[in-house]
Length: 159
Image (cartoon, rainbow, N blue to C red; front, side):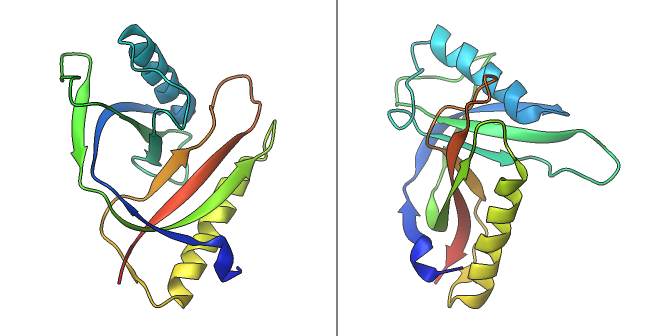
C-alpha cells in the first residue's frame, strides 16, 4: 500500500440519527429505513450534503448469514429524538482514510480487501490504533439498483 493513498483526518463531533438492521442483508435493510425516515422528515439530501456513515454491528460470524449494520445520518440541532428515531452524539476523532470504489454489480469483497489494506497500513505506520468507532462514509448513494458506489473507509488512530 502506497502511503499517499491514505489521508489523515480529524473527524469533527457529529449529531446523528441511527438506523439499524440485523439480517442477511443489513446494509440494504438499514439504508431503506434511513431513506424512508429522512424523506418523511425533510432530512434527505444526497451525499455529500448529508453525511452518511455505516459500520457492522455486530460483525458477521462464521456459520450465520445474519449480522448487523448501523447507519448514521448527520443531523442539524433542530431534529429531536422520538419513538421512531434514536439520536446519538458522536465525539469524532483522528482517522486514517482510504477510498474504496465498488463497481456496478460488485464484487463487494473489495470492501473487505480495502479494509485489509488499511489495517496493514496502520500496523506499519507510526500511529496507534484508536478506540473510537471504525466507519464507512458513503460518498455516493447506495441502493437496490446496484449501480456501484464509493466509500471512504475510516480506521481510528491515535498519535
